[in-house]
Image (cartoon, rainbow, N blue to C red; front, top):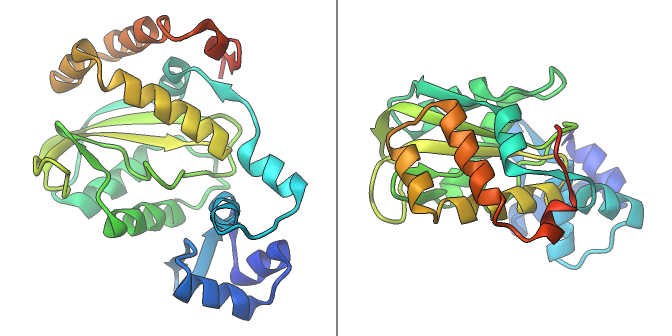
Length: 233
């Protein structure tokens, strides 16, 4: 959910001046859209939690609770796209945002600016040609279902990755809560350590083959994890 500075001040029980100060001095995540600061409600609450700033219990439950689903279901829901355009990091991210299956209520320009702001802080390139935009700060939006979108770029681009290699594979996680984001991120991180899955990514395998491999890997997860998920998005 996108908030104005005034909205954020009301939620936090402070003045707008305090919100501006937090943005300038305390790294409160905020993005400029048409010259005005906008904040993501869930990121605001996550930041407040990290700074040990008290927020109401209902607000915390909204941010950090909620359902999770299997990675394979989230990948089906988010989609897999090939030959996605982009001649540099910024244009590639613009193309990725265009691919995201988002409700009409979500401002795509806000999402794009959020991704850019994250990359300017530190690259989300993990190595081996893979990047996960917003990997550390969850892209938590007003959506009902968590999703993972996989984009294969038309050509590798410089992304400031840890290993210095160009990136051609981008996973973007969109979640209704921090809990859902962290759940999917942990599963994706596990999959990215599997040699067969990495090989399929490198060769840009077909959608069904990629999803089936994720399902195979998920079958090895502890049954306790599976009992917490909803298998249908």
